[in-house]
Amino acid sequence: MTITYEVNRAITAAEFIDVLAHSSLGARRPLDDVETMEGMVKNADLTVTAWDGDALVGVSRSITDFHYACYLSDLAVKDAYQGLGIGKKLMQLTNDQLGHHCKLFLISAPAASEYYPKVGFEKNDRAWELPRGKQIG
Image (cartoon, rainbow, N blue to C red; front, side, top):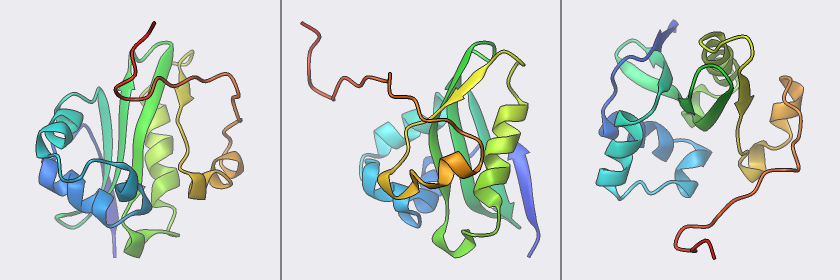
């Protein structure tokens, strides 16, 4: 097996959904809402993908200005390909695309919270979230 990586290679919503559905991240994404999934793919500023031949096996999808902040919104590797360093390589390649002052942020899935410190991330207790449907008031 030879894994290749691509920066900003176009992927379809169906390919993205397939990767998420076969990873732990799928449980936290609206996989049955194709319009939302298409918007997520089309409106990302930076997408790094991992391929086994023609099969998409991993995705790092980010929103960024490339200079100050990058939010790595989705990092998913198909279950059958986990433990091979693909996720780490996707994050490295994502980080490589950013300016030298740009910080990389992410929100960890509960099951992955022990992983990120091992690859260099530091915990940030200052983040806030406005849940869907809640208004600022």
